[in-house]
Amino acid sequence: MTLNIAVIFGGRSVEHEISIISALQCINAIDRDKYEVVPLYISKQGDWYTGKHLLDLSNFRDLDLLLAKSHRVILNQNSGRANFYLEPKSIFTKRSSISIDIAFPVIHGTYGEDGSLQGLLEIMNIPYVGCDVLSSAIAMDKVTTKILLQASGIKVLDYYSFYSEIWIGSRDAVLSDIKTKFTYPLIVKPGNLGSSIGVTAVNDDVALEDAIDLVISLSQRVLIEPHITNLKEINCAVLGDRDFAEVSVCEEPISSEEILTYQDKYSGGGKNKIGVCLGKGASGGMSSAKRKIPAEMSQEMNAKIQGLAKQAFISLNCSGVVRVDFLIDQNTNEIYLCELNTIPGSLAFYLWEPLGKSFTDLTERLIELARKRNREVNNLTVSYPDNILKA
Image (cartoon, rainbow, N blue to C red; front, side, top):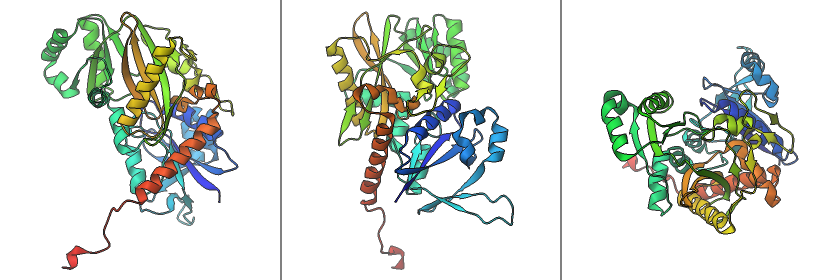
């Protein structure tokens, strides 16, 4: 029997457009001889849609026209196979259902990568690709990630964090605390966003205040870190679960600015255009960024980074494919784990190709892992047949 795979993308996230690119790359990589793919697009307003027009990237240039051509979807949160319904076009139209066997979330950032969507899918008892609710939520919050990684013996950069209301109510006290703890230059970033959105390098008080004001417009939590000026960034991916995890080759992203920017990641350093190819040899999106693969470093450092990536993946009980980002201070050769991306751009397929694993192979493995976890969860006792209220 052909399984129905729902690729869920878009969402209420500042990384909305990147999600669209990653999802269409993923859809084109899934083996159509084994699976029927159902695109499920979540608009920026949070409405769900499906339809064949969502499979063409060019259609997303005019969202109003695209959504008018697509079918709005109603969720059935009762556990069962008929998980979604097409909203009738009129009162005389019969409501038809969509049965989903496996969900494939490809939403970057809030309400998709942070455990929210994963929780909904668990309530609906739909097997889903990627990390579970807890590991997704932990990895999305950079401060919580740091705390747990430190507890696991993994080195992270020193930091100072606070919530937006503290900044609004005690601006001078926060600035004093930051300057007591650190000296310039510093990095200011949102506590729970990706794609370098809102990340700023600062060298003085005015720039610091401006950067914090920017962050609190994007996130409720602000994270301050020392800025490594002689920096090398290294990323690698981990695929699997706690029973078996394998590590990809390492890459070194190439930045056109002082820090790796949104444009570096998705426009190859350009300012205006995101190049995208959605064929089997998918490129574009995160895969279009400038990078060295494999990264140029000693075998000893390469092995150490791969070992730390796997250790972090298992420590946070991750599943699926996770890209782990590292910072190397080239003055001291100290390695710091920066963050874990539980739904990485382009699903980090380009880090597996040098090992002979195609994007299609990657999606197949992710689907296998989703089904495995769902079998394990459904073997647990979650309720008792006896009704104790009868007594």
